[in-house]
Image (cartoon, rainbow, N blue to C red):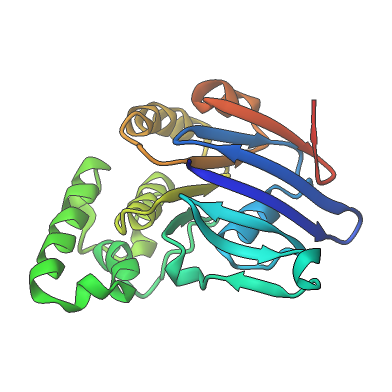
Length: 226
């Protein structure tokens, strides 16, 4: 099994109530701005806590809070231990770091990084990921000195370098101009074929659903619609 999530969260103008189970597939969650799409990703990643629900990734419970335990949180795995790669809409790169430093940032919390032998393997994989995404030549450049498409590739490399069990993508193409977006679509379609983990992309762009979705759902005011 890939991931199963049941999330109930009271938002400003409505309640988010979603339940879904998927395997190693590419799920696109489509819907208008403010529908609750990003909240789903933030709950799965552990950035925010559902009011009620359960999130399970590869048979490991990441979060559990339900009426059976009196509404208390019985399981809440910390963000850094959830084995989730998250590509934010803003990319969230560190402006004072180089491209390579940004990519390597997520590795520093891994236990394997503190061991010289396993660190070497992690660094080799990071270099491989940068090469695969076409940003090796930018390694020493500051993250503020590259294009939008290059920032997007850097953020994706950082999300993937820890070899996550789940990849979350929050409107990763929305900040790109139309010409760059079309180019990145082609590159990402090739990259998608290499993914062997459950992946969730949220968007309000139906073209991205057509291009990438193995499965898709539409969200409106916190509910999955037919």
